[in-house]
Length: 95
Image 1 (cartoon, rainbow, N blue to C red):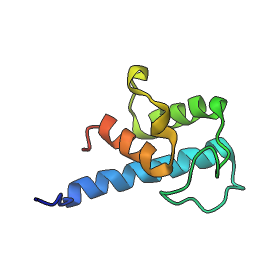
Image 2: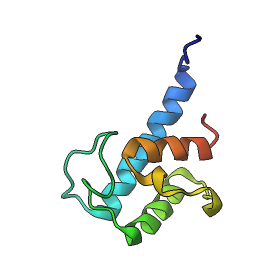
Image 3: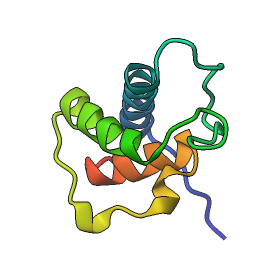
Image 4: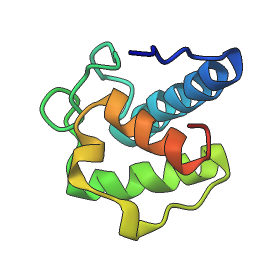
């Protein structure tokens, strides 16, 4: 079985996207958030709601200069910071 080895370029893009997700969450939800980790659950722990999802996506589009195809969006993409960062990384072509 072969292992997936992350290259520096992939790690850098993933880190950039994760940073943008954290920045967007802070803008949408305010500065009084608990510490944000990749395992943080967006709805249960951070307090994101359905209205906030649209604002979060707009912030990410602005921060990363991308446009999301809404046909690709699924609720599971918004489970955790990690799942959202993985989705956005894929959308930006970083995977």
